[in-house]
Image (cartoon, rainbow, N blue to C red):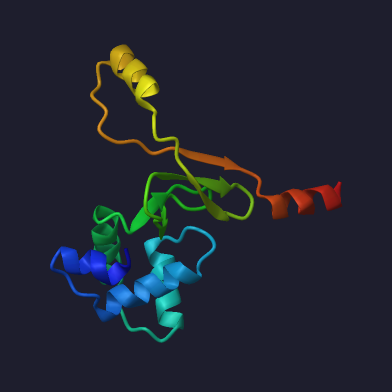
Length: 143
């Protein structure tokens, strides 16, 4: 399903600011903070406000169009979301972000956590960090 369809299903339009934010995220190879998205949109001569970026990211997150990613250099960034259940790998050297398909059945782990803590779990965020292949090669070259 494309962005236009997803927004139309909710009775929303693909406005100029929304289109600009999508464009910035499509070109990014790392997660981007709202401030970075705003700056990149300004660099592309797209006049949108920072408040619009925050509001749009909140809406896109609710609609499942983007996902929050926690990086090392920034507290929180955003990436485009693929359909289905996915998680992310983040390079702790260059902040490159890669999506991988999630294990659909975490029910035994969730049950264990609920029994141990008394919590009722309604959602989860699973993210790994490590060193991407490019940064591994750079490290090997220096050694």
